[in-house]
Image 1 (cartoon, rainbow, N blue to C red):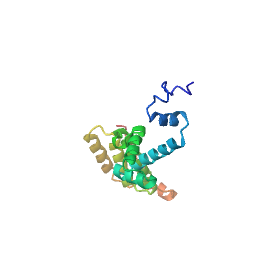
Image 2: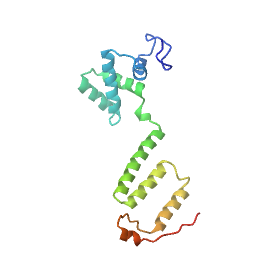
Image 3: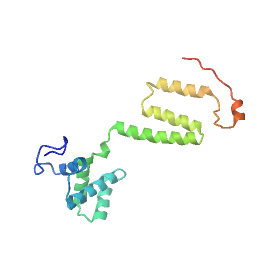
Image 4: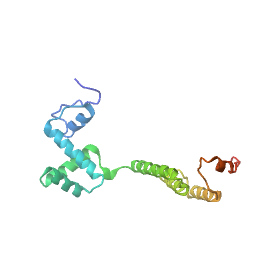
Length: 172
C-alpha cells in the first residue's frame, strides 16, 4: 500500500538504483547500513563540490573512506545525479545568492553608518536584480545620487536633530 501520493507505482526491484535514496529522503523508506553509508558518501561528495573540483573531491573521498580509484568518481556522479549538478546551477539561483550577500553587506554598511558604501551596494543589488530598465535609468539614478550633494547624519542627539533642515519634495 502506498505511503503517500509521491510513492512510485513500480516495485523496488524495478526501480532505478538511485530511486531508493529518493524514496528514503522523500518518503522515509528504510535503508540498509550499507546504503546509508553510501548516502553519507554522496552527501559528503555533493557538499564538497561546492568549493572544490571533482578531482579534489575524489581525493578527499579516497582519503576519508579509503576507496579504490574508480569508486570516488562513481560516488561523485551518483551525487550529481541525485542532488543536481552545481556547475549547471541556473542564473536565477546564483542571482538570488548574490543578492542575499549584497543585502548583508548593505545592512553592515548601514550599521556602520557608511552611506556611500550602502548606496554603492544598493546600485549593485539593483543591477543584479535587473531593476534598471536601461543604461539611461542607471545613469539617471547615478546623477540623482550625485546631485543630492548632502551629508546624511545618523544621530540620537536632539541638538543635532533640531539643526536639520526640512526639505519639501515635489512629486515627479
